[in-house]
Image 1 (cartoon, rainbow, N blue to C red):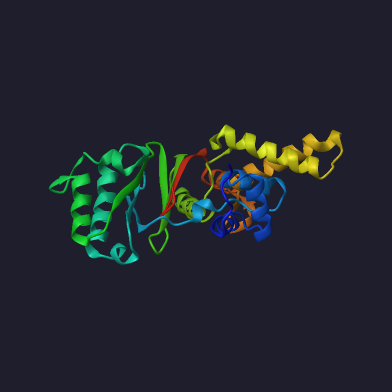
Image 2 (image 1 turned 90 degrees about the vertical axis):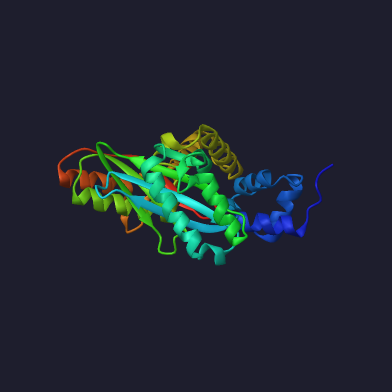
Amino acid sequence: MSEPISAKMVAELRARTGAGMMDCKAALQEAQGDMDKAVEILRKKGMAKADKRGDRSASQGLVVIESSTSGHDAAMIELNCETDFVAKNEDFIALARDLARHALAHAPVGVHPGSALDAQPFRSGTVAEAVKEISGKTGEAMAFKRVAHFRADQGSVGHYLHHNAQSGALVELAGIRGEAVTALGRDLALHVTSTDPLGVSEADIPAGLLASERRIAEEQVAAEGKPEKIREKIVEGKLKKFVNERTLLGQLFVKDDSKTVADLVAGVAKQAGGALTVVRLARFKVGEG
């Protein structure tokens, strides 16, 4: 028996897709209450914008970034609490900053859940004990949600933290160094914070997601009644557009939409007289992930 379609479910689907209320209700009925399936139904019919599920804030807290003076090493952490009031508490802020400094010195390279550092010595005990202590003092549940640590032995790590400390990004570059590359790294991190790409390039997009997008594109083209002989070309064009919009190198640069990020990187490399590659990125926003 399918789940009854409630007004709350319709409102959630509408928030996720931007589709009309009646279209959302019909999609939920067709999907027998399955929210993800209803999103896909609306997308196939061209009624849905990008799925906004990730925009729902699950908690409060801070994102903090710490970097080395050399610019070749940076760490970013997200520390969560229940209310904005506690996120502004001095003890909470001090803990978040200390965790970022600790991550720069001791976190393994890559992106990890904060629990990966729980047992590490920190302050007068361990990381987990320090978080628990401040949680007890404030009376709110807290979570050291995640940590990113990039180290570029043959390059640099750009970073950007939004002014409200609710979002930030790291971008690792390999190859040449210098002032132009440092400025590029910061610009790319700002861009990532703003646009939230899935990865650096198509290689970072999960195969399952690409297959799903292909299926949606094929059904859209079929529904539009396009001639059979040109359908595949149109589908490939839709997939290319999706990849460009969701990957860093394919996106239009937020500070100058006359060029792509790939164009920007190539231009800086040419100006500096060397090779330059974007290795990886990390983006944290409080309440996501």
